[in-house]
Image (cartoon, rainbow, N blue to C red):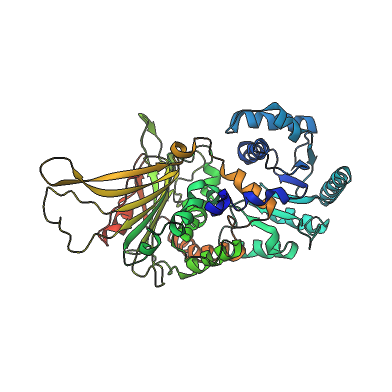
Amino acid sequence: MSDSSRHPFLHGLSKHRGAPPTVVVIFGASGDLTARKLIPAVYNLGVDNLLPTDFHLVGYGRKEIPDEEFRSLAVDSIREFSRRALQEEVWDRIAANTTYVAGGYDDLAAFDRLARHIEAIERQVGREVQVLFYISTPPSVFAPILENLGAVGLAQKHLGAAHHAKVIIEKPFGRDLTSAQSLNTTIRSVFREHQVYRIDHYLGKETVQDLLVQRFANAIFEPLWNRNYIDSVQITVAEEVGVGTRGGYYEQSGALRDMIQNHTMQLLALTAMEPPVSLDAEAIRDEKVKLLKAIQPLRLGLGGDVARAQYASGMRDGQPAKGYLEEGGIAPDSNTETYVALRLSINNWRWQGVPFYLRSGKRMARRVSEIAINFKQPPGTLFAGSEQFSLAGNTLAFQIQPDEGLSLILNAKIPGLQTRMQPVKMNFRYATTFGSNTPEAYERLVLDAMVGDGTLFIRGDEAETSWRLCTPLLEHWEASGREGMDSYPSGGWGPPSADALLAENNHRWRQP
């Protein structure tokens, strides 16, 4: 049996051999994401021989950078950020076809130069090429880039052929429902939906991909994956760091926009969606949209389904840590949340009555992202009511970062002549089983876009459905100012109001 038949998410890798010559154009080529993630991703795909035979990399940005300097910057990025050391022969093959075009994002003449540059590459290759545009810029220039790609005909390049033009769009995809709808309108005026790849790098992480494999490739899990056996679900995306020097940016974002609406809602959709009819990208995304539409509107205000807070001063690694309102660039009366917790209800047969708890925050006890499936206690258990039986509920936890893997908490007998019990944890770690050099999420996602596999990308209606849930909450906070804003110490696990969300159902937050 082939690897791709055993692991459905290797399906995209098996198709790359048929990819045509490809030009990847990175808008925002001198930016941080390009240096830290995109250049190393391209390089590592080259190491694994997963790039098309004729592969060209074109950087585009406002700064005037000679080709040779751009290549030098790319080498520096690989040396500093790649998961594997620089192999000169691999980079030399990529560098030979690496160039740079300078121009503004609203400069139509510059986009015309880009179009002629791509035409010159086609003449060099001797046949038509697929062009993949990666928009790695601030959201304020998404629209002019898209519109200019349409104006010079690049968006329509080879439309109707298998190697039609494609575009990857980085988050944030809008700030609310209205802006997301407006951006989708701009996109659809230029590109067709099958050309568009809205990226969320969490979907490229191995454990996130493995979530559906665990659910649908193991008969021991799927029969239990419903309200009859599952008591609650907790999804945590916690960061150790504060806002640092990004205070000005974070004031315009906040935890709900930065983490909940995109990453965390995607984890929820994959955890709770119904089985798709196939591994086709549209079949999977159809089920994600259905699930998101089944989430009930949040109850807002006192006693509702939401807690928000800002981190206060505290200690981190033995050193004093500032509170959010003391950070640079933060207004003294800021109502921007650094922590959000939600209690969600899903109105369908599978999940009726099962609470889903989501939380994300900065300056928390540790950096960790996980999905925890908490199973119900057995009815009328033989081992209840005695102090010698330390029973815990069974929990299946998928850890997405930093150490990708999963664990299962079971109850086991302690060796000895007395019948005593304690919870034990069974662990699986990717690094232990498969080695520590796991591909980065961006490697997988760039490759999938090149071969036309949209499974791990977000569809337009999916983004809008997620915003439809979150936008009323943003509007409520805007109207409320600091009313209801809680606080939590730096290095803690969150505010008392978040604990109260769970206490109503006699639940408590896990400490991953």
